[in-house]
Image 1: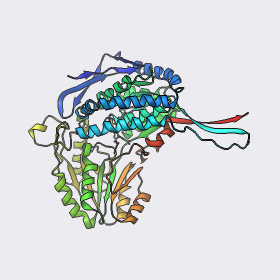
Image 2: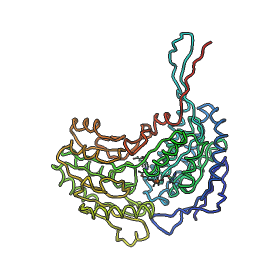
Image 3: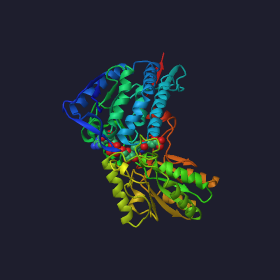
Image 4: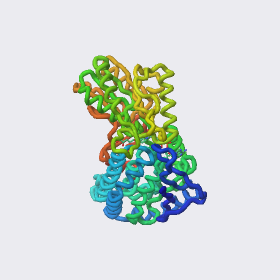
Length: 483
Ligand SMILES: NC(=O)c1ccc[n+]([C@@H]2O[C@H](COP(=O)([O-])OP(=O)(O)OC[C@H]3O[C@@H](n4cnc5c(N)ncnc54)[C@H](O)[C@@H]3O)[C@@H](O)[C@H]2O)c1
Ligand SMILES: O=CCCC(=O)C(=O)O
């Protein structure tokens, strides 16, 4: 039976005054309702921000280790509920169950990583010009942090924002994407069970234009951390800049994988399929442009096609499914639109490009793994983020040309190269305009203890995760004491 979730405001689960809910459907079985969340109004948003503002004043006074203990507690509770959270994620947004379990485990590891931060240094002693004075820097929280998240990682992304925000002494108001809200509600239930002080964590669901925008505009929200599309992110940046708040935007990608003549072809094929098509191509770090050197092109293409044909498409809950459906009808229509664009603009469709014919899959938003050949950099499918199971093959003569082509997009999130040549590796590391560069590894695969973020239009040049999170979720005081 589908569950209905309320907002979590000031330590209480409360329905919206709108009396309306948003239903979440299973993309593998269109008519199955997974659950519903509140279609909130600004009234609830204001209540959540007000509660967060009051609670933060006490929360920041706790010792870091005490705040850390709350995060350790949530991690343990999430571990007990891992199976249920992961199954909800698979049913709500379609990723396969092993991937959903992996993501939930990642969320737990992130909580533990930041829990430990409560015991670590929060400043430096700096020699003063006056030898009898003590001078030091001290990191302090920003206040109330608005967290706006997408649907593609409904557990890991809210946690990789909330955990550092909380450990450094901020209070949080989370607004998740509607297509991942039921899963996110189950994460918030774990926070609730860990008995955080009322108001420190708040969860308000609803439309982006009402709750998301309202959070960005709110005068008592001191910082906004956003992950999502470029169109929405840019608007949040403008609002935050006008208001004077701190902001962090992590947005789209158009990530290249370069396959050099001198690489291990089988490894490059495996990485292209895993990096490009896992999660149905719906990771910001997914490979979408496959730039292959001429000497290996035909061999690589043949092997790629052979392996891609073996991919099993199906419901993420089935044990033999490798690739699930697109997460929603709108995502499904977007992917189909780009496939038509590719054909219209003259790319050669090598594989897929349509819905599977299998009767069992008729009731879901499935698209076959799709591979285009003869793709030119000017084509729409080589420039715009598709966020679906579509690979664009591009042929080049040299690695230098490959890197030039790889940089010829507005995005710069992640990039990878397959090569055995150290010079190629070093040139790629130096010249590739991307925040995450990976050698002989697929483009996807973010590690929670390392900084993550993009260059160019992929980011506001801020970095998330690892120690980098401290930069965003704190500000600095310089203290000078003269006896
Ligand atoms: N760089 C990264 O770390 C990263 C990670 C995951 C996803 N993404 C990107 O996210 C996108 C897919 O996610 P999506 O479809 O949920 O993105 P989206 O921009 O449509 O939505 C993201 C969030 O913003 C909210 N929102 C919508 N309109 C708003 C408005 N006017 N004001 C404030 N908030 C608003 C949504 O409700 C949602 O919570 C892709 O572009 C993907 O590359 C980036
Ligand atoms: O969707 C963006 C996050 C990607 C990620 O977490 C990964 O590649 O592991």
